[in-house]
Amino acid sequence: MNIDSIKNGFVIDHIQAGKAMEIYDKLNLNKLECQVAIITNAKSKKTGKKDIIKIDKNIDIDIDTLGFIDPGITINIVKDDKIVDKFHPEPPKELKNIVKCQNPRCITSIEKDLDHIFILTDKENQVYRCKYCEMSLKK
Ligand SMILES: [Zn+2]
Image (cartoon, rainbow, N blue to C red; front, side, top):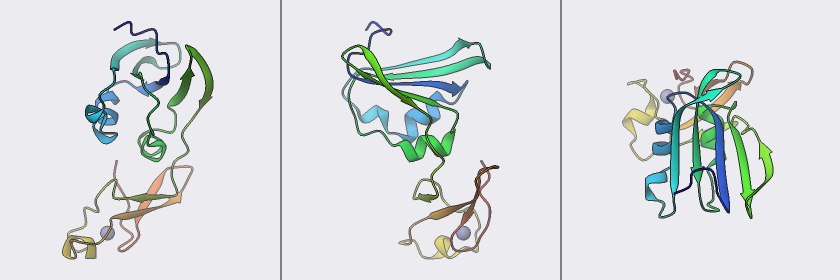
């Protein structure tokens, strides 16, 4: 695979070095049948090192999960070999079943069928709190 050329798909750039595998897992990229390239420790002018993921297909990308992992990521949309759009994912206001509440006394630990919901209570510092017990999420 020529990792420089994506015809139609995504280049997820400026990923914090070391986080590419977490994104790969959380976005279930192993389930894709198209070509996926993971580049770790690429040189970055801003942060020294960064990870990059290239996906050679126009998939339905989970932008909320990316925004939760790191809003500093740049998502480039590639069409016919050209970058046609570029944006940062917003941290989602609500996380639904992306992470689990760690509080053993939380109702979600007892009622196994409940959705795990976290609400963004402080956008600046990216603090999420459990909708049920208000315990803050540690990243
Ligand atoms: Zn909770």
